[in-house]
Image (cartoon, rainbow, N blue to C red):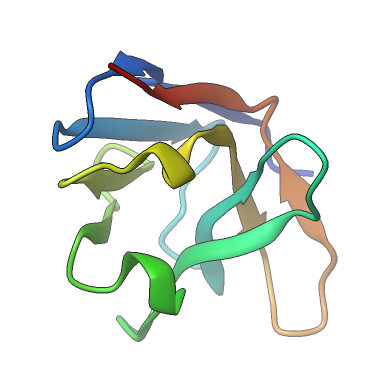
Length: 117
């Protein structure tokens, strides 16, 4: 199981930016897919962004053009750059890792993002 530790959450005003980090306990070079989900109060967990080891990315429609996912294999870390934040982006953000296309997801503990004036 990959151990994942998120950081970078916090309180930000609408229109502001945050960068989330997800540090893995091992090399991510061969991990098939890594990314971010989020869960707002009373809502289901939803995929925000993902990136495969081959470089393919996928974004939720609600964040396209505002969020960018990146993988730094040298630092074993995945980032989520979030710009032009909206109140509806408020949620707990969870990092995940999927070793292979058939593997279950390993999860981080989550980091709170609150967008409010």
